[in-house]
Image 1 (cartoon, rainbow, N blue to C red):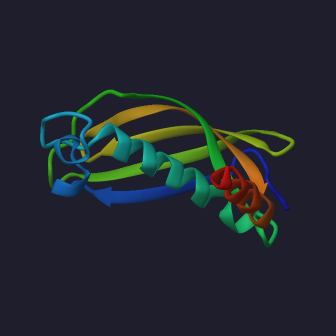
Image 2 (image 1 turned 135 degrees about the vertical axis):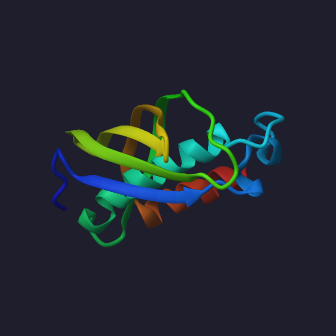
Length: 130
């Protein structure tokens, strides 16, 4: 596993009715939803590291601290970027930003934790059985 500070990832989406605040329940207006922006930022972080993880490993999001600073209308093209800024054992920290065609719409930090997929899912199934 070769995770080094500076790895970058991107994710992109177009604003459609289904990812607006009105559709996902985070508001009433037909603008890009904050939860959709957060998911795109997480996807960018995953894209930064996915090819660098050992087979059978993955990552899960454990913390987000972001702002959503500008609204984007239906039809806007949204791009999220993530840069790996710290590696502390299995904890990874990213600088994340999101942009539409007019400029930056949000940013902050995101933390992920490297997991072993089978072990993680076994714990999840045990929790669900209680």
